[in-house]
Image 1 (cartoon, rainbow, N blue to C red):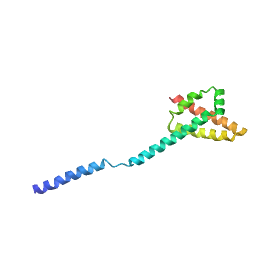
Image 2: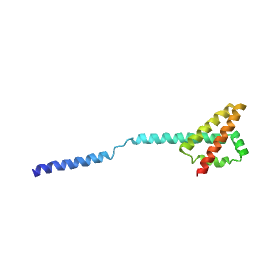
Image 3: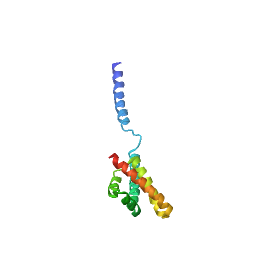
Image 4: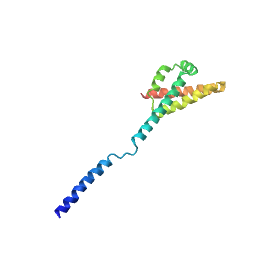
Length: 130
């Protein structure tokens, strides 16, 4: 009986060690999936930042900001530190500004001025959080 017990215990110990070693290596996402997800997020954030930088670089936006006394160079630097919902909201507004300024009509310019002011307010709120 003791011999049978020893013969069963030893394989069970090895089996337990092998199963627990494999269990530690299981992942919900594979490393490739994780890398792809992170790359996609960084790419989206870089595109959002580029949209905001483009809007802040426009001469119309610079003119409106100058009349409001806003330091666009500081805002432009803050964009590089933005992330998450703040960045998405600023990028959305910036894309609207970029599209509206391409149109160039006088009605669009009035709407564009409002959008520029909203973009500036969003960025000022983000700066105030820091």
